[in-house]
Length: 77
Image (tube, rainbow, N blue to C red; front, side, top):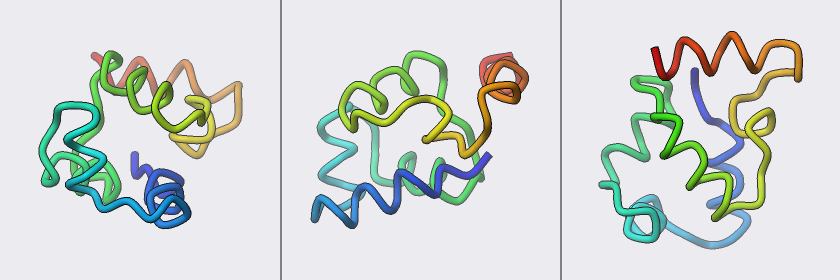
């Protein structure tokens, strides 16, 4: 599940992946993997990204509300 919206948020806020990663205590490579969909964030990390960005889980995951529960279950399962 690619987090394309996070990439746009970083651009809009003039932050690099490395800078944002330091804010939430993960590496730049981890942020890159989430954005490209190579890996998915844990539920705790997703909460932290949401808290830092003000974006909802739906916005971050790029899904409608009815799809979020299924995608979250796969992300943390």
